[in-house]
Length: 218
Length: 277
Image (cartoon, rainbow over all chains, first blue to last red):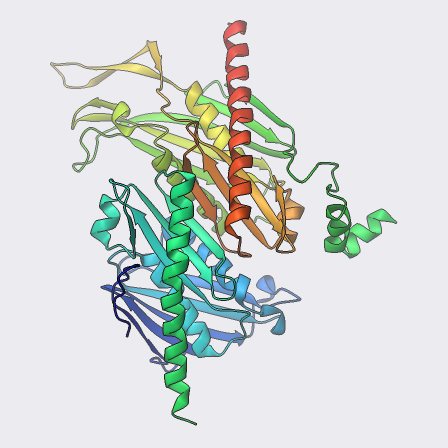
């Protein structure tokens, strides 16, 4: 569990891994009241129609808290899938399938970034080879131009613009970006800089949790 | 020889061109394909436009309907965008319910409409809490050769600028709406969002307006939507290789230039339509 820092405020976040018995990797990730449960299956057998001859087929499913997945979930699935594809070394498992399921437990803002973090934790738990790690950060720009990282649902509603980035751990580059509302180019650059700064804390958390988990064996 | 090379090693084939700062179709890295626009192609729709960017062809029709507004927004109408990718446009799409790409594109267009405030939903209100307009923006791709999102935004913008809403009065006795088809007024378009798409090759080379082949070979795609004041309405990068801040800045300046190009094109076509009538 992480503490709050002064410069980039993130709500309290934490994660539990390997909490489900059936999936090959699972994680439950929370940021404040936002909570996502994720499970990874694979590498497993793939349907012939979805088979790719030189790499694994990744499928991402996002299940909302109530009701059936809609167009909004599809758009989110696409974002998460393409982010994971960029870091996963899927060429090591050709002609196989990877399935990542994200179940929304509770949404209190910054849902997409929580989905990304839960996905990364589950992929780590499954032990799938990745070129680097990634994390998701949501920033909102309030009406008076202030940048808020990891906003709650209420802060999201009051904001003028909302952006979600996926940052990779190797170069701190922007893997995925999706925005809502209008903003200037300098505001965008500022938000990216703030997110990169905030990502360091999440990566440190990843490192600590892995360290804690495996240090018992040594 | 060249044809065999292209089929056997498509990525190497493209790389050999990119090394020389050009592309297989003769374009430079930062060059868009020829964009053509026809406005008012569908006479039965309230507004329509057909856009071609190279081979990519997209048609947008806007149909209107009267409905009652929601309780949350009694002064607001609705804009319902929908992007269709029928099996006609490319072998990669199957018939049946819309696939992931079509749904993601629909959501993207809905986000652009909301973020850019191209239409203010208050303008669609006929009478508060009773009657408002619904704009169904149906975008159909006829030929898919990459850069779908740019084409969709241009088609949508041109079609909205072409849309005429008939006058509606509410009969005070029967409380039924009466539509006067003789009197029509154009829809107010508040802002002009224009998109520019980019593809990243080999994690470093940035090209604009990718074709379908370039899209599938690239390691990342990105779409930047700008309005006339140089503000960004949408930055959509659904994954792929990481981009640095400088590269992003390059994309933004290219997107600003593209905005003026497209704006001029739309104005020119609208002007020529006025001259005809």
